[in-house]
Length: 82
Image (cartoon, rainbow, N blue to C red):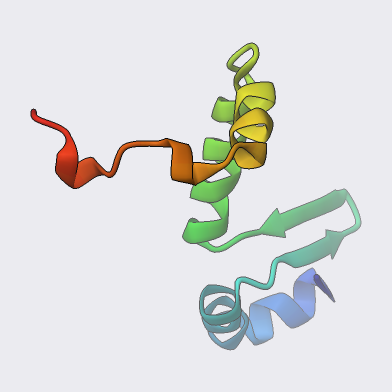
């Protein structure tokens, strides 16, 4: 995470935002009244999706269980009649 004060952020805002978008590197902006974090839209969307999935009871355990199963036991999607 890049740490920067508000004055330097204002001075280099375009370059910093482009870097955040390109490399998904969050920016921690410090001010005298507190801090703020800038994320790329991709990181923000991923975070929201993770929070949503985490809020579904039992889903995490089902995913972990599924990762441990042998995929050879399943039917290929081409063999399923829709």
